[in-house]
Amino acid sequence: MVSVSFTVHGIGVSGGIAIGRAQLVSHATLEVAHYAIPASKVRAEVARFETAVDEVQKELEALHGSMSGGDVPGEFGAFLDVHWMILNDATLAEAPKKIIAEQRCNAEWALTQQMAVLVEQFDEIEDPYLRERRSDVVQVVERVLKRLMGRPGALPAPAAEEQTILVAHDLSPADVIQFKSHRYGAFLTDLGGPTSHTAIVARGLNVPAVVATHNARTLIRDGELVIVDGDANVVIVNPDRPVLAEYRLKQSQLELERQKLKRLRTKPADTIDGHHVELFANIELPEDLEQALEAGASGVGLFRSEFLFLNRPGLPSEDEQFEAYRRVAVGLEGKPLVIRTFDLGADKTKEGLGGLVRVAPNPALGLRAVRFCLAEPRLFLTQLRAILRASHYGNVRILIPMIASAGEIDQALALIAQAKESLREQGIPFDPNVPVGGMIEIPAAVLAIGAFLTRLDFLSIGTNDLIQYTLAVDRADEAVSHLYDPLHPAVLKLIGTAIHAAGKARVPIAVCGEMAGELRLTRLLLGMGLTEFSMHPAHILAVKQRVLTTDVASIRPIVDRMRRTDDPVKVVALLDKLNV
Ligand code: PEP
Ligand code: MG
Image 1 (cartoon, helix red, strand yellow):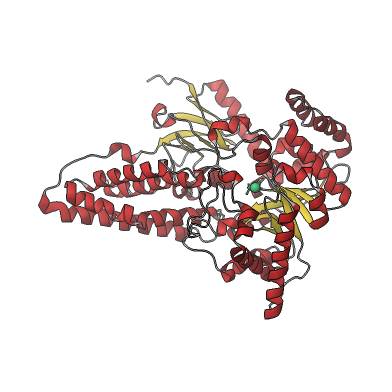
Image 2 (cartoon, helix red, strand yellow):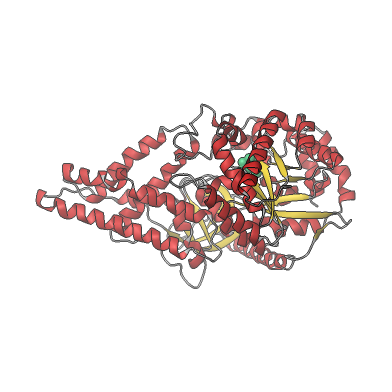
C-alpha cells in the first residue's frame, strides 16, 4: 500500500519533537453492542457489571499505589481521586444496574445509556471547571467498558525498538501516567484543550503532545510513521525522507541541548553583565517539590495552595494544611517558600465547600481568590494559621492573590494579625516577621501600585490573569484564545510599570505567570529590570541558560522601545531583535 504523506494540525500543549509509529487506542464507547438479556440472566448481567466496576476500582487503586515516590507530578493523585469518586457515585455505580433490570439489556449498553444522561447534565453546567469534569465521566465509563469487553484499562505496551506515538480520541490523566513506565514518545488526541488535565500532566512529564486534532484518530492508521512537533502544533504522518531527516536532526539537537542544560543545575543565574537572577518554581502540591529541587530552583515562588482543596470531599483541616506547608518548607532547607493563599473561584471551583463558592454569572469577575477569602474569614483564618505555624519550620512567605484595592490589603493584613494573635494566645510558635506579598493580576493594581508598595513586603505579577483582565479575554475559553496576547502593548506597559515602580520603591517583585517560563520572553523581562522569575520546574534550566547569555545593558534600549510603542507589529519585530 502506498503511504501518502499528510499533516494534522492541533494545539501543541507540550513542546518537543517525537518520531515514531502510531499506536491507535480504541474508543470503547463507539464499539458498544446492544443486545437483549433474558429475564433469567439479568442477575448474572448485573453481577458482570459489578465485577467490572470492582476491577476498575482496583485498577485505579493500583495506579494510585504505583505513584508513591518517583517523579510523578502531584496532580496525578488528585485526578485519580476524581475518577475514583465518579466510579463510586450511585449515578454510575448503581443506575446502570436498574437499566439492565428494566430494559433487559447488556451491561455495556446500560452503562453508555447512563453516560449519555450524565454527559447531557454536564453540558448544561455553565462553570467551565465543572463542565470539564464531563470528560472525566467519559474516561471512567471507558475504563469500565474495556473491562466488560474483556480489555483491561492498561495502555498497550509500546514496541521496544522504536518510539510509539499514542493516538486516541481522548486520554485520561490516568492513561497518561503510564507514559512514565512505558516511555511513549508522544500523544495525540482528537479532543482536549491547553488547560485540560492531560495537557498539564504531559507538560509535567516533558512528553510532546498535540491535542484538539479533531480527527487524528480517524485519519492515522496503526503502524504509520508519525512526527509530532509539539512546538509547531503539527503532526506529520508518513513524512518523506528529507522531512524525516530534518526532524531527526532537530530532535538530536534538542536532546543534546537538554543534556547540556543539566550541567547548569547548580550554576548561579547571572547575566553577562553581572545581574543576579533568582529562578523559582511554581508548584501545586507538596509532591512537586522534588522536581523543583532537581531543576535547581532558588525556592518555591508560587505554591498554588488551592489545589489542596480541589478534587476531594470536604475541606483540608488546619492540621492537614499545616503538614503540607511544613513538608515543603522543611524540604526547601531554608530556601524561600511563597504560599499563595487559596485562589478558589473562576475556573478553580470547589464543589465540596457546601455551595460556598457559587457558580457566578461571570466567575472570573466574581467572588474569587482574596474576595472569597474575605467573604469567608473562618476558612481564611484556618489557612493563615496553618501557614503561620509552618513558618516556624522554614523560610515561609504569604502571597495574597488577585488584590484590586488598598482596602482588601488592609483587611487581609488584619486577618493575618488576628491569626498571629490566636497562635500567640495558644503558645504555638510561628515566625512573627513572615513577609506578606500581593499578586499583581488586575490592571487596577498596577495603576494604583503605590497602595501596594506601602503596605506589602513583596509583589508577584500573575501574568496569566493580568492578560485576561487587561484584554477582557477569558483565559479558559478556547473560542477567544487567539486574542490572548502576552505581547499586547497594554500588557507590556503594565508589566513594565509594575517592575519599574517596585524597583524604585525597593520592594522585591517577581513574575509567576506562564510568561516567566517562556524562553522567548526571558530577555524582555530581564530588560524591564526583572530579577525574580517563578515558573514550572521543567522550564527553569532553559531559562537559566538564556539568562547566562544575556547582557542586560545592551538589550535595555530595545526593551524600552517595546514598552513605549503601541504598534503590535513593532513589538514583534523588536522581540525578534532581542532573541537573535
Ligand atoms: C497568574 O494568574 O498568572 C497566576 C500565576 O496565577 P494562576 O495561574 O494560578 O491564576
Ligand atoms: Mg492568577
